[in-house]
Length: 249
Ligand code: NAD
Image (tube, rainbow, N blue to C red; front, side):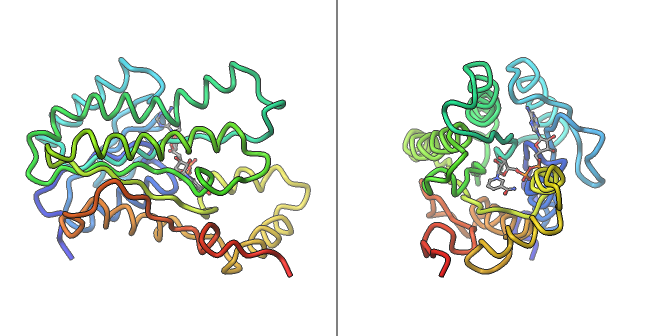
């Protein structure tokens, strides 16, 4: 399927995990893709890596401008860069709240602000934000992270309303626990990573984590011309985590 032929896409956080899977899939389907990431050197061909820190406005503005110049426009923006935080409201101080909000929420604001003038020139403009099941699920030990993702969900809806008459569609994906290097890093901190991984799989409704490629497929759908009437929606790719509300027997 080459439904992205002639389209140009920018993916933040595209050097790893969900962002890398999405960038690769868009490229396979015909898009020219620029990745904005702290780790621009980790971006494989044929993707174009641009070093950017989404928590720094000057860095984002310069990288979006470079990417738009190299691609000759932007049709699709995937706001995917994000970082985690563990704990209750007692566990993270103000500095940590600001640090994580700055990436997960304001990173989307900054990148979108820089990309909008390019998206306005596109015939098929679309924005997809990587949100999380944490936005709506009430997960324990994730107060700060969940709050950032709840804000991403609200922001997605507000942006969809603001830009609907310009033809710019804005949606988000809500992954459940996804098998990416991020989760690998968390598991590596456990005393027995293999046992922790087996326990994590067992806690999922489907008995396994979702894959980065499965989330990427949802991102590609929302970004594609096939989703021309889809805006202001959150597509869960969570193995049933939110909708089924399963409890351990
Ligand atoms: P990952 O750690 O594998 O990849 C994240 C990428 O973002 C990395 O390449 C990293 O360099 C980049 N990045 C981080 N901070 C950045 C910054 N300030 N500026 C630019 N780039 C930055 O993570 P992942 O699991 O692929 O997660 C991607 C997105 O998916 C995040 O928004 C995350 O919140 C969301 N998500 C992940 C899961 C999961 O279980 N893995 C579940 C729900 C939502």
